[in-house]
Length: 425
Image 1 (cartoon, one colour):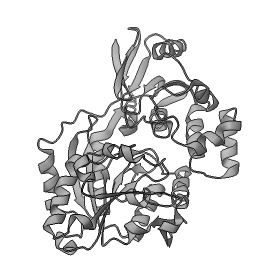
Image 2 (spheres, one colour; image 1 turned 30 degrees about the vertical axis):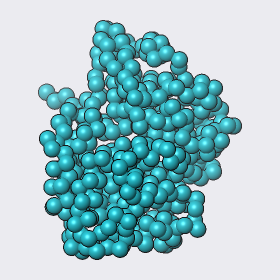
Image 3 (cartoon, rainbow, N blue to C red; image 1 turned 60 degrees about the vertical axis):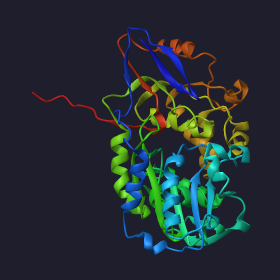
C-alpha cells in the first residue's frame, strides 16, 4: 500500500510492501465546528468559572499572551470576537498589547510576525517579544510548592487584565497545553522554565495526565501567582480546524477542556510495535528538532524494546536550540548522554538530548529530515537520505505479516494502549 506522511508544508509518499499489515495510529476523525466564529462568540458569552465581563469594564491595560510560530493557534478566528468584546467594555485599542509567549524558544524575527498575528491586527496593536534572560524586565513572585522560582514578564504582570490564548492539546510531559501555560511558561524567566521542566523526570509527568501531573500542576500554581484572569482556548482536530472553544477562568476551562481534548486527540492502540513511522504532524510541529522530538516520544510509548522508529520531520530551522547543540559536541553514545545529563542536573536545551537518548536507547532510531547530515550524526540521530530506503532497512528485522504503526500527527495524538486479554476457559 502507499500512504503519505506529513513533512514540513507537504506530504511524503511511502510504500509499504503488501506482506505487512499497517495500523494508522490516528485519533478519530472529528469534523470542525460548522460556524467557528459563532463558536468563539458563544464561548465568550458563557464564561466558565467565577469571572464576568463587567469585572473587566474600563480596564486601563490589557495584556494578551499568544504563542510563537512553533504553535499553530487560529488567532485569525479567535481574536476578532475577543477584541470586539473588549471594545464593548470601553477598552480602547491603545490599551491592548500582545506578548509573544515563546518561553525558551529562539526569538522570532519581526518579519515573521504575520505568521502568528493577522497583518490588520499588527497595524493596530503593539506586539512585544519576550526574552527569558531579561531579568531586568521581570518580576520575582517567590517559589511554588515544588520549588520553582517564579520570574514573569513585568509588563504582562502589571496589566489590569491578563489574558492567555492558545490550544488545549496533548503535551508530552505537561499532560496538556492550554490554560495559563502560555504565560506561566511562555512569559517566564529561564530559571522558572528550567525548574518547572525538571519535574518531567517525576512519575506522573506524562502525556494525557492533568490532575496528578507534577509539571502541569506546578504551571497552574504559577498561573495563580501571576493572577491570570481569562483564558480563550481552542481544541482543534488533526486538520487544525476548530472543534471546540472555551473561555473563562483558566483552571475552569482546563477542567472542562481536557476531557474534550482527549476525545479529539486520543487513539486506542491494541499492541506494541516493532516498526513505527512517525511524523510530528508537519509544519510548524516539525519546524525544528526541538519541536519534532515529540513525534519520537509519542511513538516510543507504543514501541517494543528494540523496535525501529523512523522519525520523519523536516526541521528546516535545524535544532532550534544552540545550547542543545553545544552540549552534544562531546557526546558519543546515548548511554553517555544519559549519564552526563544525570550528573550535571537538568538544563533546558540539553533536556532534548536526554529525551531523545531515553527513547532512542530503547529502540533503533532512523531520522529523515532536511537537517545537515553531519549535524544530525553528531546529535546521534542516525540520519537517512531516503525515506523509502530507510523503510527497507527497517523491514529487514521484521517478520512477514507483522504490523507496522504509522503516526501521521504524533505530536497531537495520545496513543492509548488497550490490550485485550484473552478470556480464561
